Image 1 (cartoon, rainbow, N blue to C red):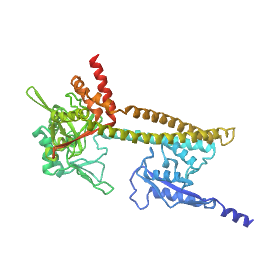
Image 2 (cartoon, rainbow, N blue to C red):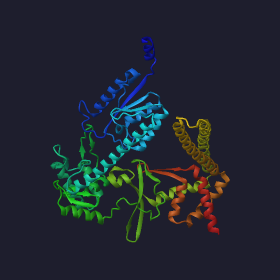
Image 3 (tube, rainbow, N blue to C red):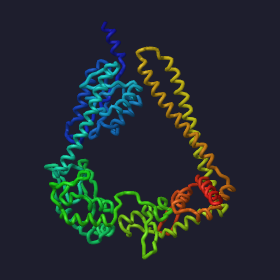
Image 4 (spheres, rainbow, N blue to C red):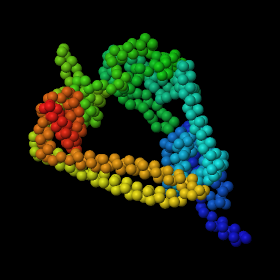
Length: 528
């Protein structure tokens, strides 16, 4: 009898257990023994109690401190799922179900992965068996309550923030220039040195009546945005002012001793840095100067390179702008970095719109006039088309192989249905396969359409030359908005280096066909 027992003990399969722990906030994680350690200790103790069954605890730690259970964006959870799919784990141990997830949908997805990899799941304080239908029911009920609790906590948090601000209290967020966070209480206290800067910034704006001169003045003085040291110990903030960060400062009612909740403004408990009248005058001036509040600005003056022109020294876009003198309007493109931080930071600054637009248009005309340039452009187009066709063909073959394999598996599983206890897992796998097949078939249809589109875009030199010869007569008949769209069909990007005066135009070689079709259609409309 003893020999038999000894033999069965030595042949027990090894169950590799991973203990997963989670805490929603970072509070207390700096302690020598924290909540994560307590959860892991409970999990290790449970594994030790099952040692006779072959259970052993893996040394790897899967600890997510300061991460919500409402989603799966957690580094330790991602490592855990990757190790499960790699076949390194046989059982997942948690202290409570809600430590793994508080989302019913996310939990169901994880359970599907667990089932596929034959990984069991154990909650130390809520013991149940996921192999039985009653165990799965209990698990889903527990998880439903966990999700309900998370949603209730979110509602309470929003209600608390609203009540806090209506009482004039600071409800959290990033520190702002002029104030520090009181370590003894959750409130803002005055930082006298920074408050002097804030008052000067408000006065500078009233003096210059524009944000760009203020940004330039702040850069000359070396004044920066708020710098602070979070719990991580890595200093944050301290960046130079831009028009955006300056506008955020000038419109913050906290500086006038107030707090904002949505559209409501209430008296705050923090000391004011500027008086209410100064704050009101600044808001009136900002409103008069016509900030758009982030609304998109229409291309109403026919800037055909809008969204295409970039400043090489700054690596940012150049936006259309204009100025008027009397009845005459002067258009130009301005570097966004120069707009925000001043002309001295950019060697390109701005360029007259008519000058750069004429240069780009001349290059487009040259494609139709110069046989060598047209041949080179079409050669590049064919190279890109060939490379794209190779990619699409490889994807098509992969999808077709996957579909054949999944269809064969579905046929095999369908023959296993017959009222057995395992029908539940078979039906679940069939449903999963059907979903994969549907997605693959939709993608395969899209790939075939793309192949046809690439072939349709192929164009010979004679056809392209004949179509591009109509560029000038068609161009003159178009409205500015249509001209911009026509240029965008062919030009991918225009790079301008103000330091050297060089302009580089990057074409869409594969759009030759689209441009030719557009020109042919417009020419037919003109002759009709």
